[in-house]
Image (cartoon, rainbow, N blue to C red):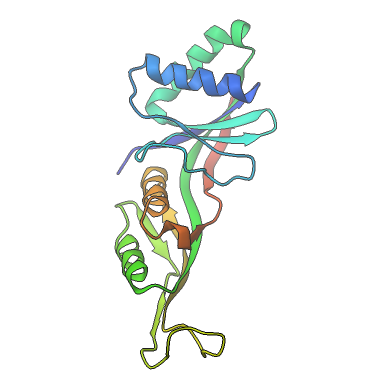
Amino acid sequence: MDKKYSGIVMTGPFEMIKGFVIGYYLGAGKTQRPFFHVKSGTIRHDTLLGSLKTLLVMENEVTFCMENGMVDDFSKAVKHARHRTGISIKNIKKIHSAEFKFEHEIYNRELGESCKNVFKETPEGAQLIGYEPVEEKHEEYSTLTLRSPAHRYSYRGKGAVQGEFEPVVQFFFAVKQSKCSEFIECHDFKLNFEGKNKK
């Protein structure tokens, strides 16, 4: 994948920015639904798979991720409507890469196999870092009780996914929407910027 993205830092009331962004995409004929970041930094699962936009909320500043080819027209639209909306663009930064860390601890064989399938391969442009899962089977153990020495089955692992923004986002949601997602903890989605801010 060779699509490049930028982080647009906007100032103003969050709901106003959110409404403006959604309206802009609808007006531009974009079918993807934007997804939004909460203040803790963790992307919530409130989006359609394949949505590649994100808003990072920090007080009255919102960083909106957008394809570079759309940035100029979006900037013009914001300036044109500024006297009505009260929102503005503070700066624009090109995104170099994205990443998130994860870990899992599964004690069900079927879910363990599902987890294996999730991490079997990543989209082109994204890669797994430091991921060496450990699978343990103890068929000799009886059904788990207070006196049992361990689980009869376990599948544990941790690592990180790094790479280009779009494939990393796609993989993040593939993990979050998987059958075993309840047992995979995904940490904050991090954006890595490059170059100087563009105002």
